[in-house]
Image (cartoon, rainbow, N blue to C red):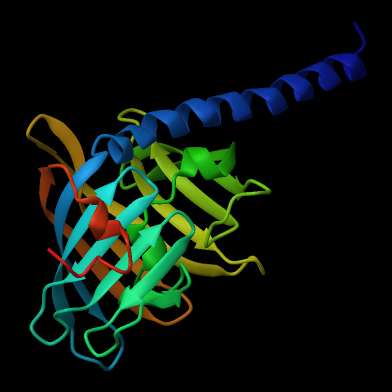
Length: 240
């Protein structure tokens, strides 16, 4: 066999391997996101920007699968505010307005936390993945995957890079890119915990690149329960 032919075969083999490996890595990492299909979470979001004091707030997030979510503001200053997401559509409900206001997935809830982060975009469902390289991140060996949005997927970011812990199969970091290729934000998945026998994310840090600032999201409570259909209808979501 000639050296040129051998080189070509090796190139084909290496080109085909990452795609399959990426799909398996992504599917394994998604298990944490899929482990809580329906219920209510309580989160605390703390954000700060250069020259500004830190702001903290608590939120109740009701979810059903990946398609439906309702975020309720629990703070005294913004009580009565909700964000409802169904599929690719989201609405902001303000106590001062009778009618829901349609908002994009990039709409910010607090600091670097956007509607898209609460709506729980499915990486495995909405993106094609390839392995770009390997990297050591905080002492962990990670596969770095490049995720490219599928043609018909309606997502906030066309390209995402994720670091998946090869040993534990967990997301450790994600970099979100806008259409121009510029970094919009970075997220680190800082801590996971087992609660009621289920492995869940307990802390995430978001660093905003477009509007400098840092946001920490703490997942305080996960409660499995049936969620009323009315909570996911912007016309009735205010009724608890």
